[in-house]
Length: 140
Image (cartoon, rainbow, N blue to C red; front, side, top):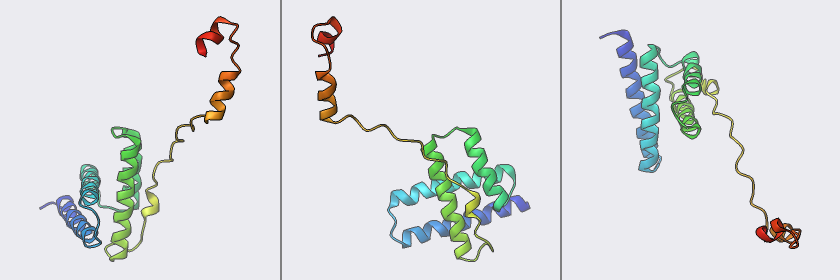
């Protein structure tokens, strides 16, 4: 078996152990499924680039996700959050020497929608219309 295949097999075992720990914590089945999917995506990336999981590979995964843009920003954020949590788990359980989860930063949140105007604001706007004009009558 190649060294790359062996490293990927080991990673898949560690992912399975991590998912078992989430189940033992009482995480919802849907949450565990999402982690499984997101971490499989990470493992597939590492297998494609032929790299074990380390700081540079994690940073490369983040850059690849952002550059590829095949996934919506929310999906990218979820995948990066899963990678960070998994890296933390590996450090906590002694599988890696150093927690390098900081190499994977979630994307900046985009500003949300503006708040709708209050009833008073709408009333003021409607009262400002001039009913003596065609546009004022139309918009009233």
